[in-house]
Image (cartoon, rainbow, N blue to C red; front, top):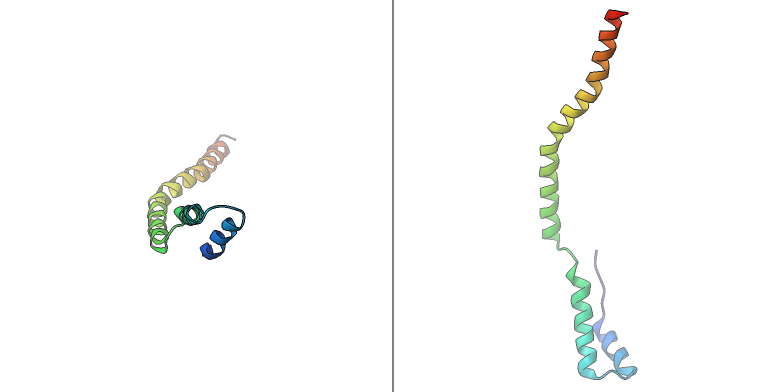
Length: 85
């Protein structure tokens, strides 16, 4: 995702409403920094993806075992009940 922030429009607009040049520039710089502060880079996203894939690979065998137990337990109960009935 790309953010467009035009400091060349931001600063003069503040000056038009009476904000001094120095303050207008400071506001523009702060707004720019805050806009980009929470923006992830492609490298950060790639690292996150790698971490998530690794976590999912570790989780998969555990989930397979649990699903097997969830499905297997009722089947075992049904088989046992059939022997008694």
